Length: 169
Image (cartoon, rainbow, N blue to C red):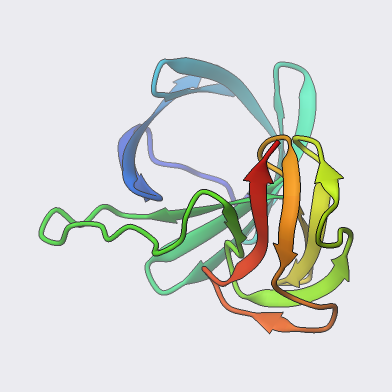
């Protein structure tokens, strides 16, 4: 197996927050602590850009890509952008409001599943992006109304680019 993580505490910049991840070996499994949540993880399969593992008996696959010092981890169509925290530079907030859904990584819009004026529910897929040979579903973070769709099928988007303006219901 390729997956040989270092045990101990690792800190990552996740958005505007620094998150500490504690890795401990527990026999063949690993215990991973993030904030106050503990996960028992067993690795099933790994290679440089893909990791299949179980958490509480549920199988997950993570796809991993790097761009400079940033790592992108996609699990269940959700993408996490992880960076080593830089104590010398303050993290700048993204210039978008909570009403805008943005692309978490560069990619191409392959499906637009909503229109302006649609009523959506939390978790409902709105846009499907293709990035690094993966389909990433951008889902509604809460119930609301689609005020405006900012992209169209086939469009290439950059990380942080607005996709959908969503208003609370």
